[in-house]
Length: 252
Image 1 (spheres, rainbow, N blue to C red):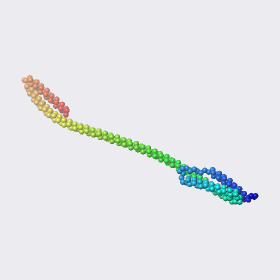
Image 2: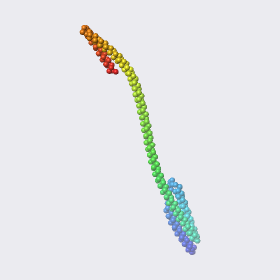
Image 3: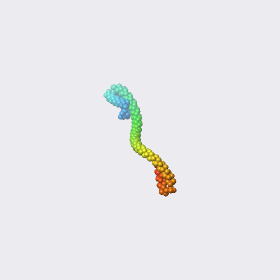
Image 4: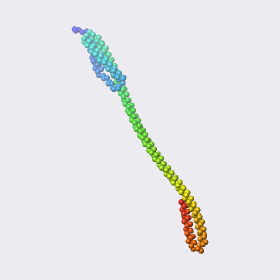
């Protein structure tokens, strides 16, 4: 072409400037990083990530359309101004899309931070629950120990009671035996007392008889010598009977 329309040239120049700005915007967009989704993230974070991916797809589509427009500008200078205006519009859309992407990324980062805080709180609660479980286990062990001690004490008590019952039975048998022996001794004592009374009566009779003999012997002693010997023998017999009676009284 021999001459160029200044408006078309200006439009092309504006298109090149817009292209440069779009390239700068693209470079700035490439520097953004999308937060990585962590395992177990909630639905809000997933939705934000999905929206970010959708915005990135829109941005790629806009770039593709800008590239198409640039190709059309190269093919037709007469439509360069219109294309430049359309490209400017698309660049504005791209900027708005980039802003939406930035806002969505910030929201995702906030959600990730909140999720991290919730996970930290969950770990704290899990640690507290583990400590309580350990305390419960300790108390259960102590309860089992006390139960075993009570069981052993009960068995020992039952054993002691059984031994005491056996000892009591033995003592009762001994008491019965002693009572029987005491009864026998009582009967024997009664017989002994009765015999002692009989002996005392006999001793009294012998004493009276001895007294009579002594009187008779005394009266006849001077005239009959052999009566002295008889009186002495009678006196000895009386003494022996008296000693026997005294012994029986002491035994009672």
